[in-house]
Length: 330
Image (cartoon, rainbow, N blue to C red; front, side, top):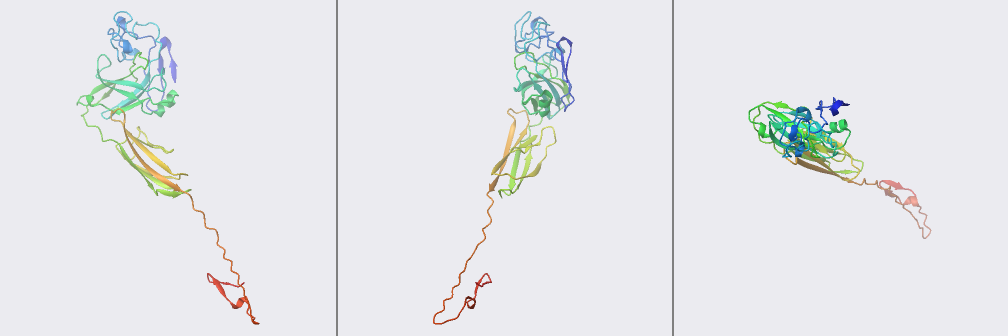
């Protein structure tokens, strides 16, 4: 549901799979930034006023914009609405293992948005931990927004916050047009004191076919197994075996009946903060042969001829002949 309120505010709400209640975003310029452009000034924002929470949590990436009145892309106080629309999204979850959410910029549909993670305070107060690309598949977000594309982020919580202290985490969506970078709904999320741990081993998978060769119309069993994966999918129309938001399944099998020789390829991912995501592949081929035709029935034709010379009187029956124990009588 999208509710339009007065003074250019838009509230996004839905109740589908952890999208949550999205933060209200103002459309009235950099807002509250004072004469220096405010923290929400995007890439060109000035070094002036601190901005207020309703303008995207102060905005990430204030830059070194101009001084004085109107400095930076988001400056000028409550002036005219910016030409572009701020990104939207939600900070879904964070713990000592993984951080997840989504971000979308309607000005550039289909383009993955970069998100910035801060600890111990919003932009201008906290410390930036890193930037990540929201390019993970989120079918629930596609359904909610009514657009195709990958807008999810899912990465291992960085070691910078695994120092035996609790931290408040904030996530900003970076405007693809250089405008204000809003604080995502759901921010901040507090994680407990975490110990630093090395990243898990890379994901691996195995596919086998039994039998590997079948006749047309026959079937083969594809067995699979995986380790260290957060999602696993197989092509050729098989689809997702499990997705990132469910418990991984270690192994399984399914039956296939391809009409032609087919190679099945499995792809596993994990999300340990690496860019690009760590990936593993495995494959199995089922060879299809033509079904042999049944043999045509065999026909043996035997002609018995008796020739009597010198007045002989023998007939065919006097000379028995057997084919496969069957007597030939004529």
